[in-house]
Amino acid sequence: MMYNNLNNLSPEDEEELRQLEGQITELFALLEKSEIQISLLKDENSQLKAQIQKLQQKSRPSQYKSPQVETIKVPKEVIPTIIPADTSLRQNKRKCPNCGAMGFSIKEVDDKTKIICYSPRRIYMKKRVCTKCRFEF
Image (cartoon, rainbow, N blue to C red):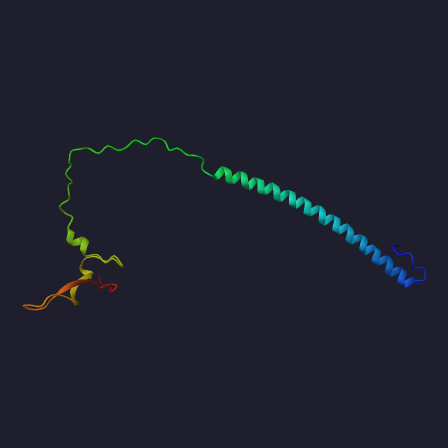
């Protein structure tokens, strides 16, 4: 027993005292196990930190020197460009930037907020309106 002056205890108190001493020993055993687990986890943590540092050092690009790239030499003579005759600039203008509709679905209407000329009569800027999505541009 842990205490010296416990001579006059009843049998019930002695039984309770033994149970409490048993619980104390179990708690000390659990404490030792948890301290062992803590030390193991600290060791594992330090190993993982070391691995992280190694991986970070590997991922850093070392003084990378790019291989010598050959420069493209531009010819000094002028090469004429050929524009195909079937490409019309008018077709490229009539395309809705919002929905992509083309052709007759784009109408040109007067923009009454922008006046170009007052005399001899009012001349307005033109704006395009898509008849499919009603987008004005």
